[in-house]
Amino acid sequence: EALQKFGIKPTLAINGSVCRSYPRVAKAALDAGWEFMGHGFVQRPMHHVEDQKQAIHDTVKAIQAFTAKKPRGWESPGLTVTFDTLDWLAEAGIEYVADWVLDDQPVEIKTQHGPVVSVPYTVEMNDIAMMALQQHPSEEWLRRGIDQFDRLYAEGEKTARVMAISVHPYITGAPHRIGYLEKLYDYILQRPGVAAWTGEQILDWYKKAR
Image (cartoon, rainbow, N blue to C red):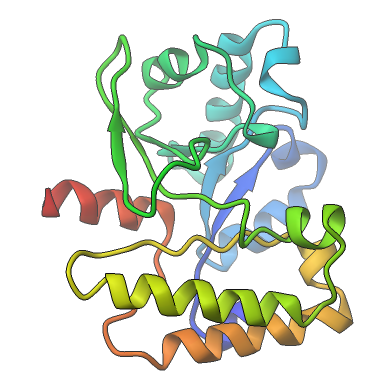
């Protein structure tokens, strides 16, 4: 409801198994028009998965079967990868990843099966890092978010910047936190030239602009 208030359709990082285990959750996201992004078949670090290639295949297949659309993006659980992960993702048809927190702009990464685009992700504006691990007070979300946005917005006058915002319902959805997310979106979306996009919208913009 907080996202709908601002007309925001987010990218949902979802385990492939959730489409079967929690179909009501997946259906709610599908009905709301959210983008489904692969997030492993189960919530397990990729370097602990015995057969990564099969897990990637199973995830893509499960999301495609549920949404009637093949996922274009991928975020590994815990941002964990091995030297082979990106090659297997590209082989499976994944076009962009959010595993590489390396820039505020998309960049291309070479693989054995063609380039994959790294779309900006964040551990700085990520409620797991900020709230669950660093245990900041709830209001820190708004203060840091405004500071993050203001700098990227100023830099964006010369060339576009991407501000990633990563939230999890069980953390930011808590009553004492959700209001700060709403205040942050209210602040951001009042500025001219700002677009709230999904990962695949950023990907398409990047390919066209480049």
